[in-house]
Image 1: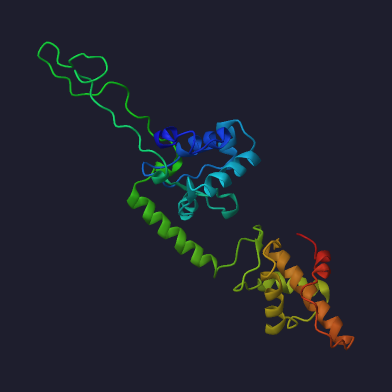
Image 2 (image 1 turned 120 degrees about the vertical axis):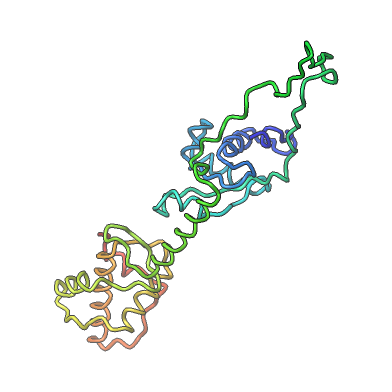
Length: 258
């Protein structure tokens, strides 16, 4: 925080952005890295709205006072990726270095000699710096590196293992439908169990991978896949040879959200 306080007014004229920077610095390590308070936390600290906080963080990043850091640090503490705040690193080289503290003595402004009654005090006056209570400083560097490695391994595994049935997610290339959930949906739709061919599945995934804003649960994706298969069969039965317009996704609006 001392770095943020030492910035000149010319370096950062926006008082609201300066306030956000000061509060953000309170969550950073001694080297200025690894600060990841949420926008709501910074809003409570500053008294600003969350929307304003996000704008000021963008402004601070544009002027080069902060930049996005190692996002795996937040993943160590927060499992759900949609709830992880952005990790920022303070760019300490952009600001003035804090003035070093000096011992009190005959050369300071008081003109007093620190040696009294033959005793030379060696301890600086004033309270020690308050410890940073941010959650990202409760582990050692070795523990943090180990936990980051575990998170990376979990993320690699997540690309193979299917998500929890209750979790909503965007479509990805290696997704494989649950056999039971897909069989249930095919039965409800009156389709045979071998209706989903590899080509149909590839077309379905390719369409929705290109639309990352569309999210659904695992059973919900099986429902959408079943509707896709049924639609293709209706087209084949009608002898429609025209390829579908994949830029038009209005047909998918009625698939519903589970």
